[in-house]
Image (tube, rainbow, N blue to C red; front, side, top):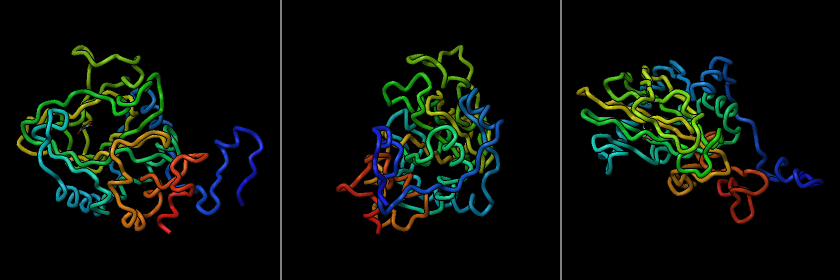
Length: 277
Ligand SMILES: O=C(O)CCC(=O)C(=O)O
């Protein structure tokens, strides 16, 4: 039954869809220590989240999809990337929609987020440190403490100080607008084992590290944004409906097959899921 709107605020709280009602996705509620680290440092490392089988399948698929090295010093001239991953493999789905990540998204971003970007990053031998940045940096008015995004970096290789472990500037998600890391600001490498995940606030300054070893450092990054923002990767074009139709919840919703109340995301006045029926 479509609800009757009684007051203006009902527009933003009521689910107006007749057929494709919003549904809760299964998630794991984060513990208080996890949230305390996320809130104060701007990041938290979740350890050992994947079974050996899931990790192996994800690792094999991602390595197969890696493209050429970067076209500028942000992508990294010695770093390979892989984009549009949801159109290319199903092996990464359990990471992108991991219940622990969904729990953090619900607690600290939004219960119906969008997947803004999802890419493989293999920092190769000899790579120089990446330019520090915040993943929310391209949204205006990102501070103070605007909850625009939440990012995850999954380690597929051991992450060490020497091989390019992601550098984080603890607490930088709380910096005033316009402040950038100085040489005197201390960064920390996110030292991780394969299957660990660095989860961070979209306002956290971070960067891929320098790789002074002879091996690559492979990661998957999944970046999520609030459902009223434009996504970095144009997911509607990157992942065609015939693939989205085969995906399990909440992946279609993460890819934009959702309505943010009252009407954001409609197609021809209808819920986008009608395209999948
Ligand atoms: O690979 C990493 O450790 C971080 C890379 C990153 O933040 C990016 O390319 O946006």
